[in-house]
Image 1 (cartoon, rainbow over the protein chains, first blue to last red):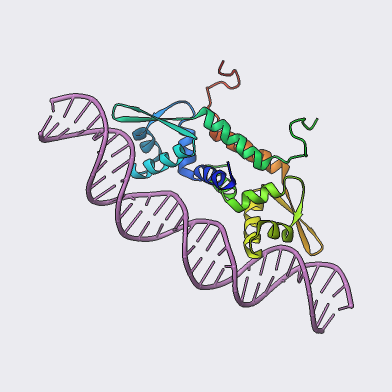
Image 2 (image 1 turned 180 degrees about the vertical axis):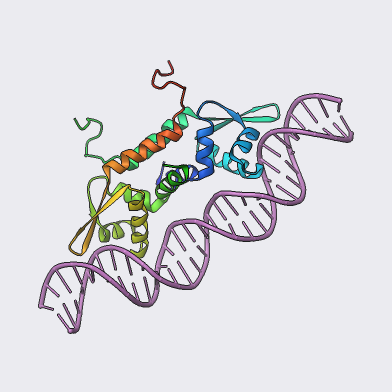
Length: 100
Length: 100
DNA sequence: TTTAAATATTGATAACCATGAATATGTGTA
DNA sequence: TACACATATTCATGGTTATCAATATTTAAA
């Protein structure tokens, strides 16, 4: 909803550490301490990045005891790719009748 | 080719003005002066943004007299969306057998 | 309660970036 | 040549952001 919000969501993915988080979560959820050691960044920095990814809707957090388990939001990821498509696909006027 | 390069390309799209450029170019090529007046930004700023979009491969520039005509790179856009998918699609190990 | 582990928040700082004024370069026309 | 227009580049600046040290909060266990 709005270019400003879209720019903010894309910016959430425009960081090397956050891309690494997305790759690390491809095969399922992981806790913060695991991500922290895998990425080799400090705990406050990881917490900062996870907040940005969650705010963008790309990642969801699930609390389990003293751990927070993060995973890719399937719905958020689809919405993100749809949004990206709306800026990178060339519109030929009508819509989805295709190019064949 | 590399997370750093991917982050740089995504960052190219993570700006409100550059998203507006992408929308303005959806229906075909436009010269810089047209984009400049449509977006309401200064000429140096537009030139700056167009360089970033071209470097990211999302836009191509074609010179025609004293004008530069910009358009969305169809190939670059596809590659961009494929790259985005590689970070936002969850790999279940094998591939496309689905989630049903 | 105390202790320890995981996470979040605050504060400071350095690096990055978007912006526009001034200027330079390129291009067509008179 | 001179002039006007379009674009690129340089430079300075204010705003944003990634980073970590220090600290606070949350949770489980002793």
